[in-house]
Length: 289
Ligand code: ATP
Image (cartoon, rainbow, N blue to C red; front, side, top):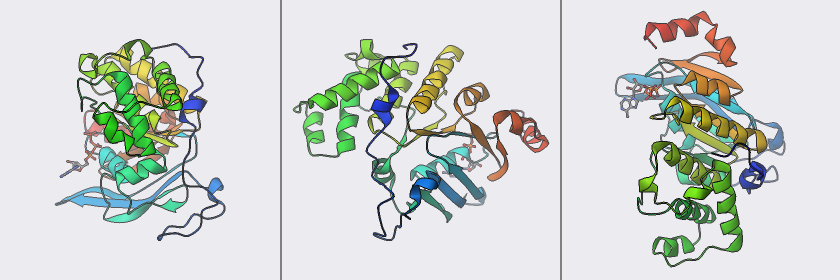
């Protein structure tokens, strides 16, 4: 991974987000004229249950443009469930989610991605023989959403100059230029995570969401990934929402955290502040975390 690159993440991430303050009421969604002054992401009182388990009970969060926010809490607290409600993987039983002032509750995940909400996944080996560069090229095409994506999948397409340049910028930023021609099946887990991050960046997100990106990585790889996430956030306009067990990683990446326990918010503030909170200490200690 490069230690600071000549390429500004700005050029890579700053994008073409489609929701703007000039939009007006359309299809049941409304972007107010002061949308720029509002949080980028607002989730209000999200609740959802699974059978008899109340996984989330009235959880709210606000993430400002360019801000890095963490969601922490002991095992089973509801972090991943909340994450999935925000990115559209799950539909909450009640509550609402707004992005740039626009209600997105009824939007599936792929439409939220078009608005600028990109999430990383744990695994990238969808096409194990496909190279790192081709993975990012497909992600670049998916963003455009045009018919050439299918030609790519049939190995018939050739990327445009600006697409090639953007892919090279991302490879540089995530430190994978030298592995660009390597099939993803041959990568270490740490490098797979970087491909995943690169794929998300190809969407030019306004909000980058990552669920447990350190899972399976060693301490050194985790630190490198944390530093890269921080650089992406600092150098670009992208906000970050991070669900993570590794509190050292959380400390490196985020500006503030929301703490969940048994599906409820129990504290919010800097990591230092919340970890000094007796309710948070007892939530963690009570579960042996
Ligand atoms: P961890 O840190 O262990 O990943 P978490 O904070 O992400 O946990 P969730 O995975 O969101 O917590 O789970 C919250 C609660 O909801 C848990 O009690 C979990 O067992 C339950 N749960 C989550 N998803 C489902 C599901 N699909 N079906 C049934 N119960 C679920």
